[in-house]
Length: 300
Image (cartoon, rainbow, N blue to C red):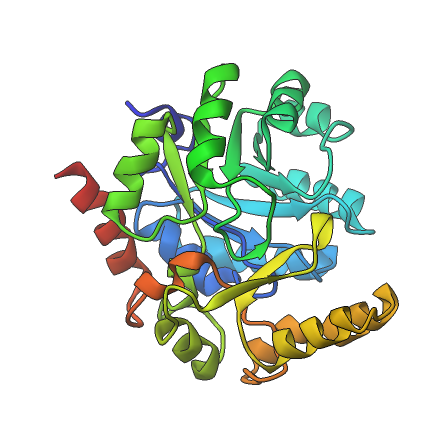
């Protein structure tokens, strides 16, 4: 049996990447019901709201699912207590160290995976006791690191003794087979699920992804603030302001709330977060179909 399916209790070694403000219970339940691991985003939620999302997922599927915890969130301790109280089977951490939470999560029997951008952090996560790492390349949408999936995954797989999941630049069975050859035991998919029928974003956002070309995405910001999305009026304005030596606070003001604007249909000043494989995403379809194209065809 595959190490990831054994760890997660899923049919396929596939994780739906957490999409901030987007991966809510309809998408999460659909992915889990189809044999993958659906992942709830906890971004912007309080404990009561997260509990409701968890309960809604369980009303729609009996299969395992995960909650993503952004460790820099101010209320993360409260959210950790919530996932423990709700007996969530899997937690995926990002943007920070889970060191102070690992003992409690392990005691609760919760499997913990950590998103990592480089080898050093992968090794740190293994020492902390996480059950697997998700090596995310800069091809991904949203906040990104500096290494590509092609270079990151084999280097991580060489030095850690826990399962490795690959993320970034994967949209069909060819990508799945490629990262398996690099040493990954599973995949995390984000951009392809943006256009799932169950994904609660505006038709305009989905259309922007479907119509995107191979060169449609750009990266704004740098370092920890680097974000990949589809080029539009927002990114054009960002680059103009950056070229004019705008203060960081001015750039932050420009982008604050921009993802929510895109979610609600503003594709001009909204942040259309998506990965480089947006050019491979050509139609809206149910999550089960997306998973079938990724996993069943990869097994053939």
